[in-house]
Image (cartoon, rainbow, N blue to C red; front, side):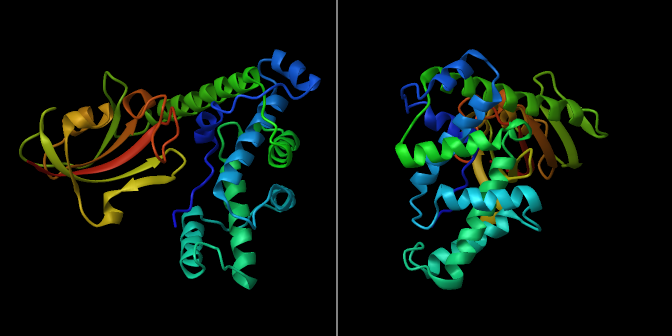
Length: 291
């Protein structure tokens, strides 16, 4: 079973097809206030609840999550690693027919892990520091219980705010990172750091190369790794994201670089599986061969 995190940034796109009518006069007032965090938090909650339903886990519901979130807000979630938590869930899923037969201690453990994963994901949202949690929870319950969806204006306000928040976080990260010793910046805005120099030739943009790599978001969340799969990957340089096409041409065979890639040189405004829209990306890449 593939355990899916409810990445709030990714959910922004998911809700755009929802449509919906205006739910209340208070929401109408909020719409007029272009950066009203109550409105933004409410839509945030609706999106979360919608994706929660799509998870189809009968033992997870907003009422229980809200109770758990209350405790987490007061006491924190302790020592918690999302990757380790997902590994635990996968192991339980394999033993319980994708949670269909889960019960007893496994059930309680799974519910606790999911609650912590969801809370951790919400707290890593680009707007986490400004979120009005009560409104977020209202949105969760309204969609879950009654299927209410915000107005198109509300959704547009939310998506605009989220987009700008994500871009600002990436820009701030890159600005600070560019000041670090050993980090170079190209004319395009690509940043790179030489971890190990190579030897021999450099590829050109039409080359096919063999490389090992690991990719993370700037919060450290890993989204892909050839190391985890146990073998390097072969690909044409003109068939990958612009940051890779440019960056690998800086490398000689045997080199290991770290690339910091702005969203416009990565997966842009659409994102891709596991990578939210407008994401700044970090890749560690070893160039093994030119084919």
